[in-house]
Image (cartoon, rainbow, N blue to C red):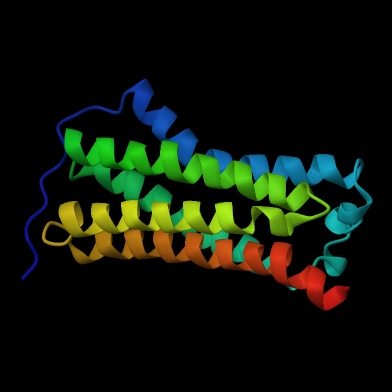
Length: 180
């Protein structure tokens, strides 16, 4: 039976918009980085000719859009209905700052490297660490509280990001060995 949702009495503040921007920033930086690389790195000449783009790019982009829709939906849901408590907020920040941010940096470095394999173990370690933080958040804070809509947003966010990461992983670590 669905519980009746009460509106979140807290108004949206500027710091809330910072959290939204922090969620959107990796995708923005990824796109800006690709555009910059197009004119500075021959390996990225395909960027403005999307029909030449590898399938991993399309998978990453589509799954990233799904994750972004889930993330924005979750953000709006929490601003309108269920506010996030201080412990859960701290858990989110820990995952973002100590997991997501280092992972993004490692992914960028591996993507630009002529020998990305040297980043393989650090990337996998940070992914496992970040996954543990996400699981903690889901099992401790969301398991009993979430209604179906919020659960949907979380699944879009988590699985969209996970599949986007797997597409990048294939592009960065597997494709070079297939292409030669």
